[in-house]
Image 1 (cartoon, one colour):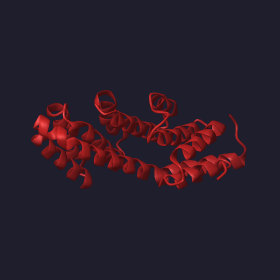
Image 2: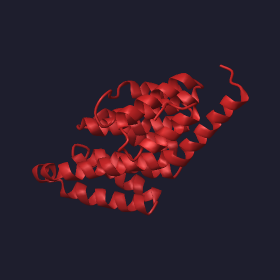
Image 3: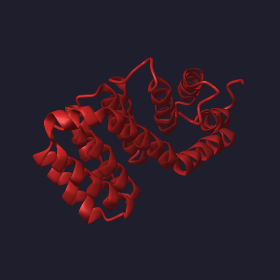
Image 4: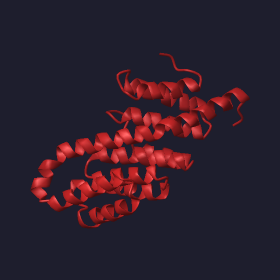
Length: 213
C-alpha cells in the first residue's frame, strides 16, 4: 500500500514513539504483574513450601536489577527446572523476559514468555506474557506473528485496552493506517482517561490523524 509523504512522516513518527515509550509500557506491566503475584502468592508459598523457590526468585530479581544477564539465565533456569509448579515460575518468566529485552536479546526474551503463555496457571499472567511477546515481535518487525499472538487475548477486563494498543502498533508496522487508528481508538475507550497510558496512546492515535477527545 503506497503512502504520500505526509502519511509516511506520520508512520515514522509513530515508530519513534514506540521506541521511546514501548519499554516503559512493558516495564509497567511487569511491575504490576509481579506485585499482583506477590500479593496472591503467599498462600501458595505456605501450602507448597516453596521457600527455596522464593530465595532463587529474589536472586533472579537482584540479577535483573543489576543487569547481570549471566546470573539471570542461571537463576531463571533453576526456577524453570526445579520449581516450575510454584507461582514463582510465572513471575520469573516476566522478570527474565524483561531483563533480556532490556539487554536487546529479543530471541532470549521470547523463551520465558512462551513458557508463561504455555504454562502459567493464572490467566492474567498468560495475558501479560502474550502482550509482552507481541511487543518483542513488534521490535523484530514480525508484525503478522504479533497479531496472531494477540488473537488469543482478551476483549474485556484490565488487559483489553493494552491489547488494543499493541494491536495498533502492529498494524502500523504493516502499513494498515486506518485499522491502526481504529485499534488506538478502541484502546482509548477501554483504558479511559484515568489510565496513565491514555496520553501515550492518544499521542500515537493523533499521529495517524486524530481520534477525537
